[in-house]
Image (spheres, rainbow, N blue to C red):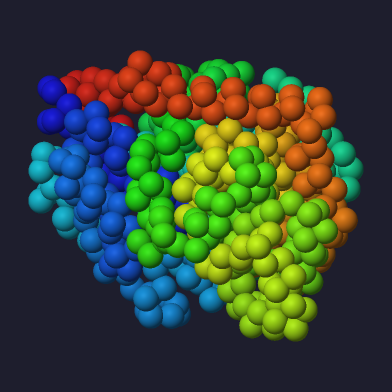
Length: 494
Ligand code: UDP
């Protein structure tokens, strides 16, 4: 059976940190001549249209299965089809419930997809897709958008449970990892540290359900590459009978500036935008790019500390501002404080969506201040710049440890605890002095700074090679396809 007779059905979670890498993954798989259908909803089809249609026009075998999303039936605003569109993260459960209604239409459409799909690659946060795979007797492969470091740390914590006996602030060593990594309980992801709110507790049971289902997956595809976290990949593979395929970094599949600019939003700015012109006028490796992902909404007080810390550092910067329901207060401060006029020429604010991968690939970016979402982390690695780490929620403290301690390419800003997205009043954790100090340390031209930059450049080169023909991720993708082909030919039931 040749690759052109294989067909993978990709079912993403409608959230930028999940949908963006899964669109990239669809392109990578299609480049290996496997047919791919990606399930999407109308607003997302529009948001990702430019990138998807360009890929299809280039004759990649990608199809789009566009299904209506019942937002209003689940108490969500009309047209709210992505987690970053939620007016409040207290509506997360409503969103997940609305997603699960896609099961029936997918099943109804399944037999019309040609050739018949032989594998589902689903976001692990959609556990009902397991039932679709079971019904059609095909393997259920999961994508959960995290590193092997996180996978292994999560598995070991689930097994050992030692952390349960600790107080919030006790430092402890994460069990069973190849390196000695220390954390506190309040830095752990929600599965182990749900917070005290009613919503947090409600989400804990959702997370436990996802975790239980995850264990039944046929295999896991990972947006990472083996050279970056070799020991963690090896250990995780042992746990999963080898059915772990690191096939990233996905963002490197965007080879031209238009794809980089429109990744995650068709409206993202392009070449002649003011910000890009400003970047073009800066010195090489001098600019700090600051973006805390698609979901983080800093409180106004915390935002002010970040902004003033950047100003005090004296380095040029690009700061992405996502206020959500806090936009008005943040804008009021910006206006009354005269911040923008003071930083004119030295700093740029981007309100809303930034073309992150495009900016990161610019020669002038010297460091990336990131919230350590996994996509941003690996995009920082691909950019070959050192990172200033400010983890916010989920597994982001794990990613910080990987970047700072294992890879040696980051400096922590000093965040001490996970913020739960559903807790609307988050305590302030990081001062302007913390931000200014971390920027200065990372940009330092002394021996330590140079060493960090050297390691970052070396990782960038490894990342580039990994997805090129003959690279580790390219070969892993071939092995993954081969595994599914063998499974399909044998007619084995998942
Ligand atoms: N992103 C972007 N522009 C923005 C914010 C985010 O392009 O203004 C992209 C970013 O490049 C990454 C994804 O959105 O691919 C965010 O995923 P990540 O895992 O870093 O964090 P999350 O948004 O899930 O917290």
